[in-house]
Image 1 (cartoon, helix red, strand yellow):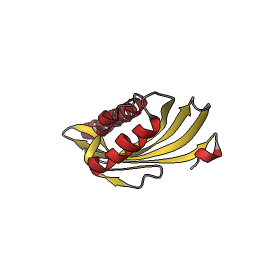
Image 2 (tube, helix red, strand yellow):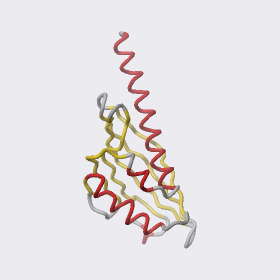
Image 3 (spheres, helix red, strand yellow):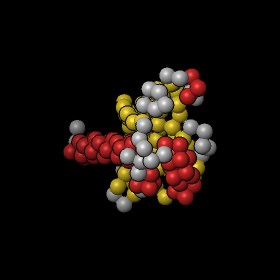
Image 4 (cartoon, helix red, strand yellow):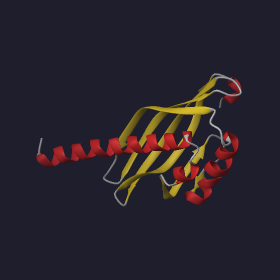
Length: 149
């Protein structure tokens, strides 16, 4: 293996770790109900689709998901938490990557329940920083059939 190939592999590993940190920040901010900060994790030309929201384009449109729909549904008191596990990330180039995450949401009210889902993501490096370019969340299973899909 050449030095150039080794440097490329190391860079891909470093980028993968940065993307994992980005996605964990996303989940932690969601759990902390800090939706305005969540928006800062997205590229300006992003797309997002959360469950039945439809595809939203650009930060202005995804505000509908995070600042209106989710903030309204979740309120100002936390009754749930998220786990983002099993990341499968592929760095496509110096500035693009894609991946999937298995997501679990655990609810304590009105009853103890859980939802399993999948985040399908594309990432872009903007000014040296990885950001979410595309995020699609789909529910795949739930403890209560009315919560799925």
